[in-house]
Amino acid sequence: PPGPRVADLVGDARRARTFLPALQRAATVRATVEAVFSGSRVKLRAPAEGCAFVFGLACVRAPAAAARGRSGDACGDEARAFARRHLLQRVVDARVLDMDRHGVALGTLRLLPEDAKRSRHAPAPPGA
Image (cartoon, rainbow, N blue to C red; front, side, top):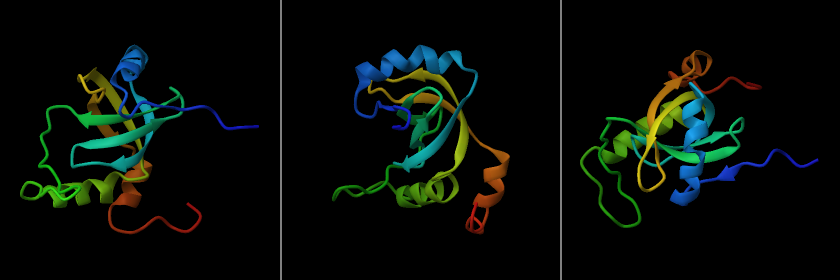
């Protein structure tokens, strides 16, 4: 049988808005970080809610990284590299507080303890 359907809400602000009440109703959303766009924006996949969406850290302004021939802000690439090193493919708890006009969910993010140990310095052990 096919796997569970997951609605990809990236780039579709109107559709993302329809998921906002469900994301806010849950105290925390268990999700996996699929991509890191900058030091403060990531793409989360939440299978329990049936969606994948862009998540921005509330009250955090990270420098813009260089992309598609554009030069970024000072330390932008370092901020993105830091976020990738510590968050990419990790399981997190996200608390969605609001959503901006572009469909980016805003809130707080917490790295779960079992994944925090792995993200320190060493890569994941084989079979983990």
